[in-house]
Image (cartoon, rainbow, N blue to C red; front, side, top):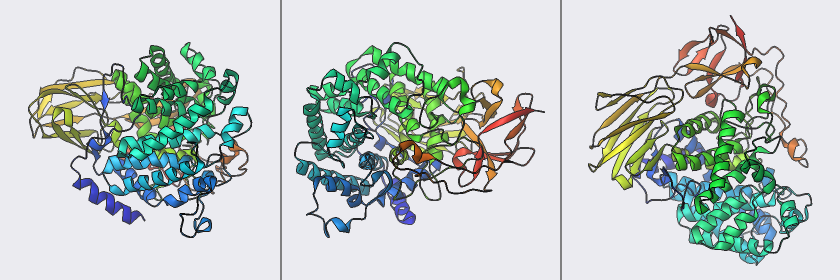
Length: 634
């Protein structure tokens, strides 16, 4: 399987110079009616070159290509009673399990994620196999929607929506519809599939009829249940069509109990469900972009700053057991359930909105931190499977999904995340290019008539080189991010030093009339530093080298496969991991004069005096590890 798809990607990527302009996704200022200081590039205009990010993309593509669309569509066809067109009928289809099983209320959500992911992977690689996979799902969903007859579309009966509206127990039906609707919109935006938009509009029309006369009391009752970012999807449908009924639907899902306090400046989130919260803020970001509602922008920025300054672990990840906790007690909340990956996926989406608004390098600093230390670390290089949580409990290890029997929410968002690494590398404004990430890549800046190639081994190396492959002689500014973690950079253009007057977490602006063959070389020195868990007095800290979180290799003693499905009837019991951490596990780190005592053994490897090896968390797989150390002064 792996060998087959790798050959596809390796053949396709070098042959594509630049595909036709396609939006990188509808989540970053598309059709904005407000002032933007930066714009995202179409994903098709950026190509990842060989390196750690592309390795993850290729493993993701391997899994995606081998998913059987007939099996994905089975639960939808089962709901609509449509089997006549299947060779062998009902019994010929092997059913997927886990959260896609026929007895799970969330079935169908993975199909929505994959519609988005196939579109993203097609834009990122140009490989037709991903467009064709998306087309086959869209065609099957059109058949199901026609059979259901009223525009409704899901893998579960409409009765689950009715239960939600009555306030009865049900998992998250509107969450699942959000994923399907967003996937259809992404298919339209990223691959030009008009049929996908037609299906999405019918879903919107059904929802408009369904909710048109719902009393306010019922609306507030149903919004107590998780509904994902379905309002964001309706905002996006409105952005494409201009139909006000979709704007009305987006506003229907405004969650007063959650957003009103934030609008008033209240950032006490208690123990609310984190990944239920973030999509509601993303929807407000879209509201600002489409209606210029300043309050929506203010609350989105307030939320983002509160998250990144007070609620994030060193990895850029959020939550424990999926919920907020008292940020002053972070050290006591370091456990095996930290860092739900969907939270980071959504924080990166929100970050893209904010960067388009303000071009703030601090946003790019966070984006880099979360991308390298959580998203990159989520995927197992051996199998391509992904984690639900990124556990920070000392002695824990990563628990991966399975190809056919998991399909957790973080599997779905993972399909997307590993397809779109290229989206955060570059942004642009009139006459200005932002280089936010140091990643081997090729860019076609169409508006400027310029193509360039970035070559780097970052983060194994602190240097990056940007070669102008083609220029039309126009003057412009290339702005290199001066990261918050960097020492004094050394920057050269064609071998000549550039004076650096800016400070960390800013940009180094280089303005000139660029010529073909010009080369920018930059060295951003990295060093070891520590980040405390909450209060320094707690004495727990993570070790980083530059932006990279280092983890101590604790070996494999006593490792057992956790049982994540102890009681499928209770959602929180899906994740009752027992890591059997040995009692004598060493988790202390010697510190002298405020610096950890570490010896460098390789480019990104270090060792404690006791011989414990530290490596990037994204390379720590199938072993126990420590991220937060108990510090001791020598």
